[in-house]
Image (cartoon, rainbow over all chains, first blue to last red; front, side, top):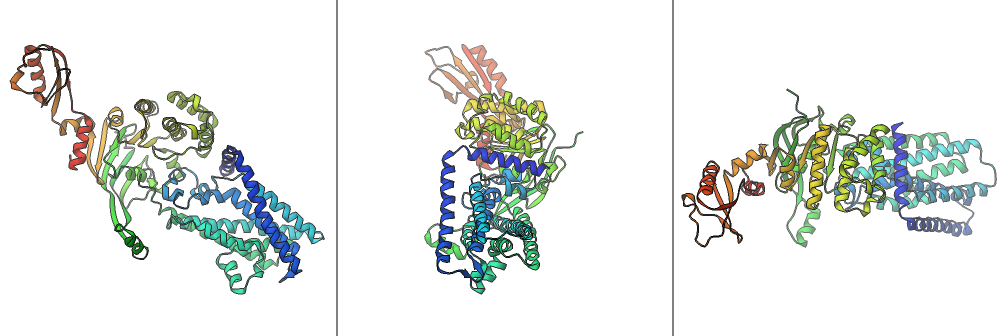
Length: 263
Length: 329
């Protein structure tokens, strides 16, 4: 109960902070539309030439873009801002600003992950949902309830997988405090805009098992448009649980390395 | 006899710090061949603090004050030794422990800068799960003590350093901690704001009986607040006792200032003693052993037209500087 109350408190305080700068809203809106526009344009160019690529047609790929936008938005809304503020030369680990996070009588991983929210990620979330609805309309036939349920389960495990990856990067900051791991990760995450099946087999292995960004978007989109075989559904779920558990352990070890700042 | 609130035994902290020569060549070499040096920031210090005590933790820059405070607050794991604070091992960071302590740092902020302080206080109230009635009562009390009601609705970003520091103190005390670690709370503040905050800390200690460990470079903070000081130098504990006793021990002399009626003939002072300084206004300063000060002033008053006379200890800054320079008490 206390955790839920705190989530509400953090969200409210973050929104209050964001609203102090009105111009940020318009810049965020522009950025979100640009992000959506480039994604859509690439798909239109691609599917202007071909009907489908390795089994993925336009509506299915559009659904995948929608999932990409939704998952990115949830990261930007909930845990991204908190975890990303720990890294870099001006990050909380190197400057010692993490002191106050560690002094609170609340689970440190929870506080480090959810204390800052980004209100404007709601724009991305709304656009993502809109793209997903458009994809469903383009499919041209009713999506079975089973597919919707499977999609929601895959979406939850996708967000959990993404959270685990971000938590691993946040933990690595305690060993390499100046490195902005998320910058490198974001470049790789761009590949998740397209179905993982599109890539050469070696890259498919990397994007599925090593840095599993591919399955973050591919599995939910496949669940919605084609349905997901049970082993794949359960495998995705198991992977996300394993990743969150492993990342939490790594984060705990990392915290014991915290050296604060010299003054 | 009450059990000490803070007990520290042989506490040590060693940092591993990367070192390299100056210059571009050395910078490039450090990419592949990094060398480290072990820095013993705190070396086997031991002390204890009674409940409700205010203790000044002093020492030159880099002495290990902040490192010690951070270990006691649970932020850093020590390399060796033991400590218990309010019955807990700090670096286990149990929630029950963290609820009992607070750390306020003069050089770091816990406020949300873009919104008024009331909103930040509310977030902290929620984090510490302070019941609403207690929250309102504590907040009212702290705000009145600090005289900061007019600040409550302005964004923290627009505050002066002193105003922000008042907010930091409220933020640190909203959960009524039993132990308070203050790390340079008056850093960079003007003289009147320093005084204001000192009064507040003294009053807070009187009302709440909280145990307070304070570091400061301003000796005025320490002399005004801390009957007892712990002095550390290069990570080692040099002195732990009464501040005035330290001054007496290190500076076994008194300063006698005497202003005389203007007279053209140079006065003959008792015992032929010569002043160490004479000001333009005719104020003579004598330096003499403590046990001789009383007799000297009596003779001075009896033999010369003295219009003003004061006897005082040498400034504490001079005493402390002497220790910092010599590295021993």
